[in-house]
Every structure is written in structure tokens, then in C-alpha cells.
Image 1 (tube, rainbow, N blue to C red):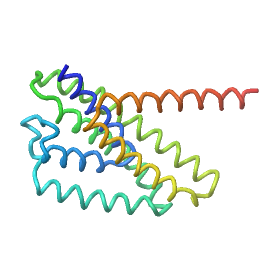
Image 2: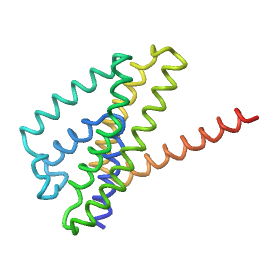
Image 3: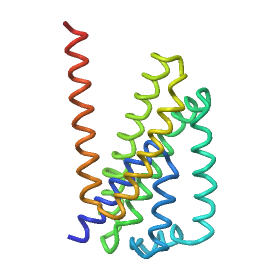
Image 4: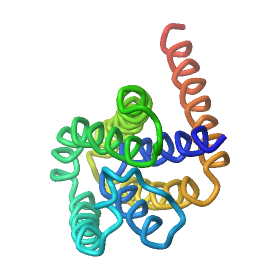
Length: 187
């Protein structure tokens, strides 16, 4: 059961890295230092004060940059591979006491996949916002994504099953909406 909870924490945090790369890493660092999450010994450095300070600075810079429409679009493009690496790193760091081959396989497939899904959704939302509002709504969208990232990341650490189910519900709703839009445009 501990492995499942660790994997749910990793997947949920990784999904939020698709929206904001450094937020889940910052929350993971804080949770590790508080003793709420056990990190794999290989990744114990994430739970150190120097890394916490670096992640805090990186998070503030990232959050500020998303409030400028042109920079926001550049970050969206660059964030896809970066968020996938972050998702893989996050998931690998919370899986403790598994064979390294299984850990890395799970981290790449689930963590990288969840981060890619979050990043794709974020980029889709920003592209739609830019197309419909000329980018004027992007700062408001960025604020919503930031709040969402913090909320889900904190939930992932405190109540991983609920965070995972909430993310699954969001994915289901998005898929239904896309299907409805495709049906309307085909008609």
C-alpha cells in the first residue's frame, strides 16, 4: 500500500509540474523537510535547505514570468521537456525501496506522462486564451493555474488519493469537453 501512495504522490505532483515546473518541487522539498514525505536516499538532496532556497527563488521567477503574455508563450513551449524531466525526477524521488529498474520505469511512464499531460493541457488553455483574447486573459489564466498547482501539490502530499482522484476527474471533464466541441464543429 505504501508503494501505491508513493506513486500517487509522484503522479499528482508530476501532473502539477506540467502547469508550473517548480511549484511541485518546492512543495516536495518543504514536505520532505517537515517529515511528511520520505524521499529515496538518492534524492535526499531535494529535502535540503539550499535546494529549498533555490526552488523558492526559481518558483518566484517562474510565477512572475507567466504574467507577461509574450514570455508566457515562450515558457509554455520550453516547459514541455522541462516539466517532463521534473515529473520523472519527482516520481523517482518519492518511490522508496523498489528495484531501480522498476523505479525508473514507473517514473518515466507515470511521472513523465502525467507531466506531459499537465503541460499539454496548460499549453492548450494558453493557446485558446491567446487566440480568443489576444493574450489579455493569459495573466488571469496564469493566476488560476498557479493557484491550482499549489492546491494540487499540497493535496498530493497531504491526501494523495484525493489529489489523484481530483486530477482524474479533471482529465475526464476535459476529454468530455473536447469531444463535445469536436461534435459541434463536425455538425
